[in-house]
Length: 425
Image 1 (cartoon, helix red, strand yellow):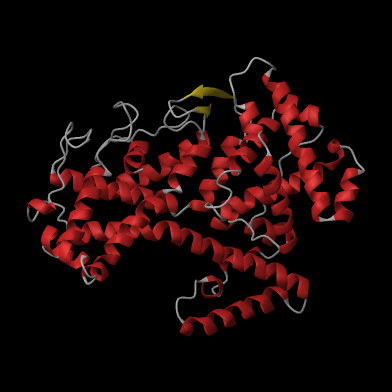
Image 2 (cartoon, rainbow, N blue to C red):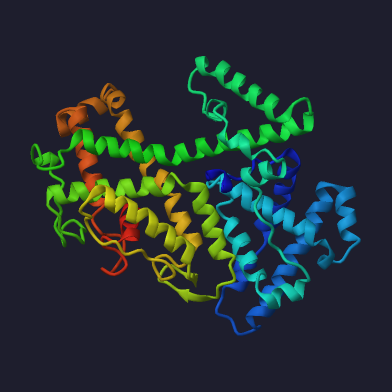
């Protein structure tokens, strides 16, 4: 089922097109000009003007990238190049899904521009529909009449990440069996089958990169702290509202459960990363109206996200049934000042590795630092040992990264589903 959301790896030709798109987005001031409370020109007029500038810029860069193909685009009106623009935008969206850390300053422009261009008035003005379905492993295999491949037992070893030299040969052999079984002697067909398989492998690595830090942090919590009572004062995770910035009051046992459940929730969400991107874009590009509002963190587009809401409800419901008693609020913020739209939602959750990785790197480096001249003496004087220092760092994180802080009022922070991430952020 996951193959329905796994994007296809870009070809070399598509990567060249991606550079054209990134260049056009980098110099575009689309959101700067459109998302402002201005009365100099009506909103539709601003959208159409800036959209035409972006489309013209794309054609200009296409000419620079490929004089022959770009020249053909120049010979036609912008409205007659719909296939080109749809392809370019689909490539950008697909690349971002596979590489959440890329296009950090340009993807927002792209998705907001596409969001505006889906309106019937704007679509009539530019003369074409800007959206194309994102190419996925499932859609590619369906076009090849090869969906049975997804159930083949050789798929798992063929797409598994290689973690040792001993795994290389079995992986290569499984890949070759699949290519022979579904591609035969047709070189083109084999290449397309291989592209699907490496795309599944890319997705496994991407998910692991997001989930592994959560698993490692969860393991540290369980290793160094008791779920029932602290072993000593240094291991006490209790917090009190109004002290050290905390907005919640939890005993040690309650705070332990609160942190553990929050990490389990993050894991349950991130393990479905391809689906997250798919439903986020569905909500953003669905045609739902949005309002521009100053949320206290600048102007944002407030838009409902019903598909994301249902997804969060499903994940939360399953987790609550597994853990028994749920600690804290189960409220999910979407379409308000805290999480204005689905773009902000997915951006926040894909930041989790960025939040946890520095902590994990520090914990892993403590033993080496303990042996370093000067640093080792400081650790011994201040904490008594590297192990005690490690536990102090973890206790501080598990208390104050999950204390309901992160906003200037209780409604925007607290123990709600979004508030847990806001505190850690």
